[in-house]
Image (cartoon, rainbow, N blue to C red; front, side, top):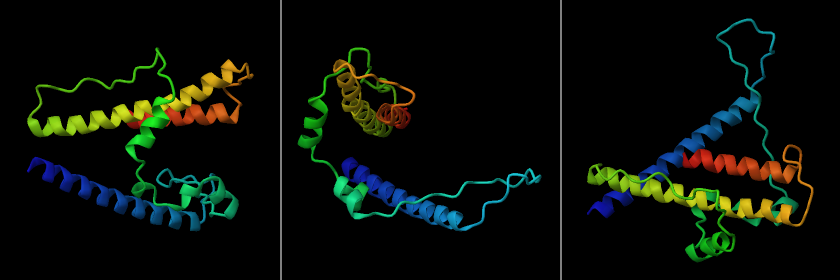
Length: 168
């Protein structure tokens, strides 16, 4: 019975997230079409927002990233494939891959939610392994790495920061 409720909640959450994403996409698209007000405006109640830039798909981009045309939220990776990707990369000793412990004093419903969140946090932490391994391999091959200006390193650092933000 509790499993059914969890599934219903998860389904509803997915639908709400899809609706919110659709609404945000519509509002940002409308924002792009509006004129951006000049920065010289002296009205403190008016906020200037930069227009959003969108890139249309084109054949070379789709060839480079075939999954881009798929529904991102409806394209789950099989567990075996995901595990292969993660576990072929080593763990790094200084990295803590374990989220904070679960609250044993919480009521049963909260424990289930906490367990789900714990699992998500753990998965996000594991996703850093391929990123960290990439940097390690660059250093191991004695490639000169400029952490501030190397676009690949900046990308890895950005993705790592975003994963940490999601897991927090």
